[in-house]
Image (cartoon, rainbow, N blue to C red; front, side, top):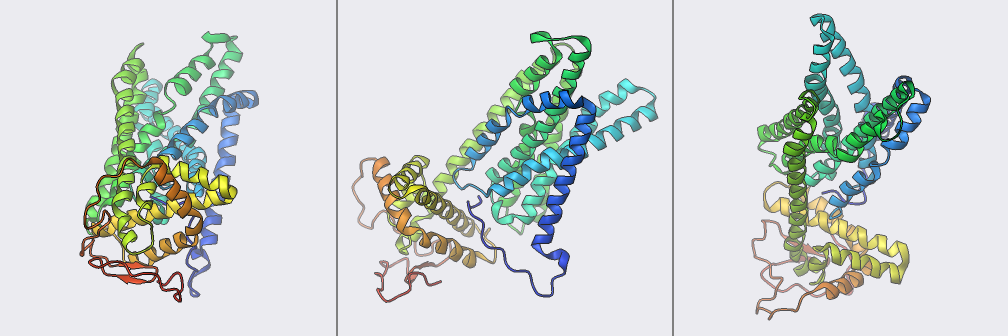
Length: 447
């Protein structure tokens, strides 16, 4: 998982060309998204009219905060930077929606011209072309984060969150178009009230199935998340997993779109037989993954207790979301908003440290393992004075009755712990011996 605060980017080499600089690339990406947003705004407004656009916009925005909050909740164990979520939503709402509208329209017209059968062209466009185009366009955002923000993409939940927020942005723009068009139809036919086309469209797209697009694209995100967990030596697997997730997303999307062609009750049959069970299964999967990540925090951080970086109670407190909330409230009560933010950042860095060590023990850590470990420890050390009292208080608040203490201590570390030696703030620690006491003359951090 990602950390809540990004690390400073490495300065570009002096011989780097201007187009290789991070500011140039970020500026180009921002300009691309802004241009796509302006174009998609013009296209939607042209199809719906100004009044229809405003009505569609007001109705389509209703599920967005709930969906974004749900995905943000999933990554509360180690929250990623907000800019990744902003990029994902903007890509889905602007770039992916624009690609989908242009490609779908072109493909449907081409099929109609070749077959001279508009109804067949519409059916093929909805059930075949649209799922392939739309899921590919949304998957591009996940791919970009996976390639260029690799530190923020280390597991399944990262893929789920990025894919889900991208799909939420895409569904938002699509809902504006559909709801605005339905409102225009009601204006022409005089429909109003519960029986209007706008009400029916709102009920189907916003009330019954706001999770449809996120559910499809999350399958792609899970594929990328599993690829992030695979070892670097398994290159074919790392390529096939995202591709398999994308194909599953296309298949489920095609089935969902085909429900409109299966008769009067086809939509409800597909909804009950496939969509609801799939949603429940994926919800269970991501919640189980979240609990597994908390367990990883509790299991990996004791190595740093023996090294002197953490107190014995901190792994337990950091492995409990309830304890983290108590720690933030305690810090806010005694130090204000700044202290609460420091405790939250401390927990995020500690979680990233636990995930890094877990990957190292499984042979999936990169060549920069030690550098990355020291970066995380340094950030934690800068916040220790604020975080430690809050976490100690939280650990006491949620701790069960203590069992009898074993002779070797509850935080003993095997001598060959993961093949990585542990360095404390006062030097290296031999896992087979007690941690050395602090040196009053030593610098508080020594890499």
